[in-house]
Image 1 (cartoon, one colour):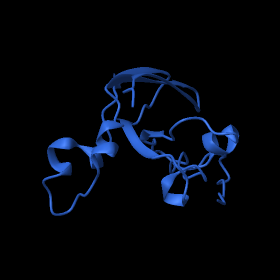
Image 2 (cartoon, rainbow, N blue to C red):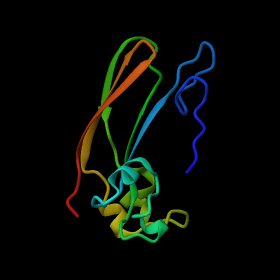
Image 3 (tube, one colour):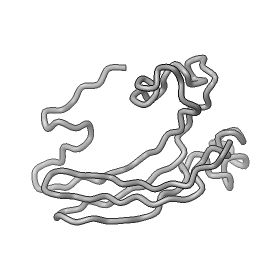
Length: 132
């Protein structure tokens, strides 16, 4: 995969003058660790993923979205399952198609804290994940 990093140094965190950026944290399960752990941790769809012929499911399994934070401080909120894999709509919709395995991989609960100091952001995420 090839990424172009914008001049301000971060993909997606380059607000226009006078604007702030919304931060979205998306969690992704890559399955059991592989021999090439660095590639698994740093590649969205690594070779261990079923989408690339590997044995692991690799599925987005949680999300938390923050409104812009204009000043130094922190905000804590819940982490929810990834909306695409909501069991209430996953199996009963003409648009969304997912598997029971993808639904089962969704986080059980969690919180995310986003802290801002100047132009630096830090995320601290605590999760309860299912045992598959």
